[in-house]
Length: 388
Image 1: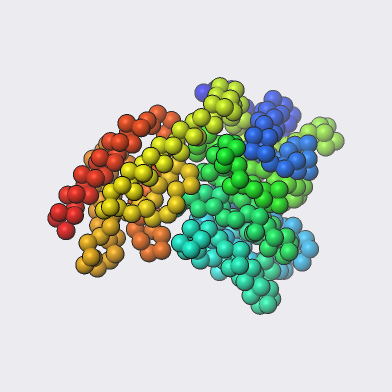
Image 2: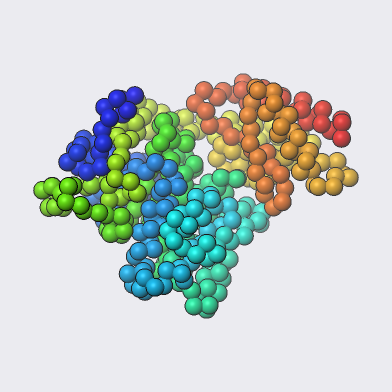
């Protein structure tokens, strides 16, 4: 309410020094909590900026990477640029490629499977890059995931970094959902290797008790971002900006105007503190682990992917004579459970199987809600199996 009521339009430092400087401060606080490398701090070569969404974050770094490589190989090489990610990557990457004028056919979504728990294999990436180079194409961008949308899979950052470093590819990490968990020491290892990446993104509005929209992006080299996105019309010129004495976040994003989003994040950090936020994350993960135990105790169900954070992927096992491997059965279970109005779960498809997803993420969720949800799932499963 404060952010909206104050109506700050903080595109340049001079339009609101407070909005600009508070953003720098809170992103440095978070960088410290996540143990990000020095280059991601405002005192290093890069820094942090608040975007609206992870979709905007991947777009701006893709544009920075695109322009950086084109300055080296020439703008006529745009149709040869190749982007890489796993097939579990959010569709925002494909949209970013479309907006960036890249050939959509050269957005390589590399196949994953259960053998890697749906994480991107460095060998598969390396082979794809070698094949593209042999075909005269130019690899330039990798988007890895820490917590994929479907199953919260975690790509192996250190091994992928070796590949990107050898091929001079911009390495972006999308940790939109799971990045929040990495403020807990026991989950920090999921972003080991972050010192080798070029950009890192997490959404404070997903699991960090911050109102939408508040997507945090850190870059190792702010110059690449500014060179790609900066404009300097006469009506925006001022002494502070012209003298390179301040940060103008307008040059780190797509639009000119921007809201006082850092005030929301500052309020959350001051209200809960790091320990309070860690407790919040751990509580959700513990409830998801409890739900995972309940699923494991009922032989009619199976876990469909490892539970890494607070998402449980599972499905109802079909009768032996099932024609579609139980996909319709699980779709019907989803519809039946959601029709109660008591709980709401979502689905995905992994390796051709229709999977149910139970996510613990609301601030007011308690163990009793998990028990009620499981009871509803069991009752609806029983009814469906009897009728099938």
